[in-house]
Image (cartoon, rainbow, N blue to C red):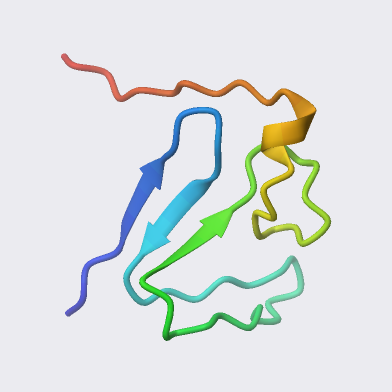
Length: 71
């Protein structure tokens, strides 16, 4: 079984590494390029390609520095 890792990028998107399916509210799958090593998902809410990141977080001033708890 392949493992999926989701990495939180500081002030940027979520990077999803490994095979996964992404479906909309109706259960319809989004097309995913399986040749890419990672897919970036928008966190800022401003991407024109939502739910995918298009780099808009760099222009809109998005701040996100989420870290996992250490205890």
